[in-house]
Length: 238
Figure (cartoon, rainbow, N blue to C red):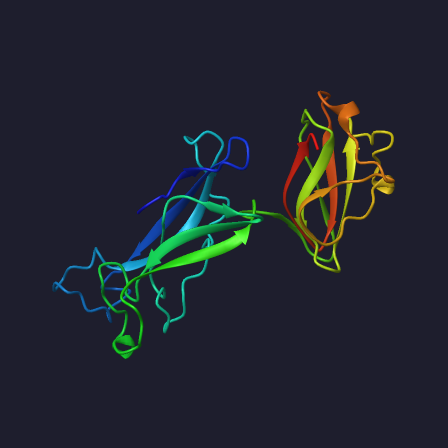
């Protein structure tokens, strides 16, 4: 319905779209709806926001079809309708996005008579707050898991993670050559445990975080996770 597409300024070649998905009602599935015009059903239904991503702003993918954020309960102002406003605001380590909603479905009908007198605002602006780069994550449960990147080349001196393991989870990192063999000094066994909630945490191997010797060379990054959410990683100069 709407897309609220934007170029995300805090990552390279990252475009985000916050689509307003519209599920239309029909007289067969939703006979309890009371159209304002008799027999007219096409304008009524629910809307929710979903996330789509792109590297060029042209070809888009939706990594999942779940709601980007949940709509409210039946007695709350944003119960059946949500449309994202364009733009993303950053303040420190957090992102803020604004959305609009009402206590009614699209085109202002109420679902059932029992909700006619439920106290809701007829319209409003809400805000969602999340961590920097927190749109998607690679997740592992307490059984553990891993991921390995394709071959990448980088410029920089340090590898840094945006990750949340909580108190009980961990992460370890190994840098590998094109054949998948661990590079000396960057083995999994040498990696210092990463544990906690970090926006920008350097990776260390026995006290060393310097990776500039590998800059410009094709490598793979192997990451072992236990009960963790990895949001992003990058190579930086500092």
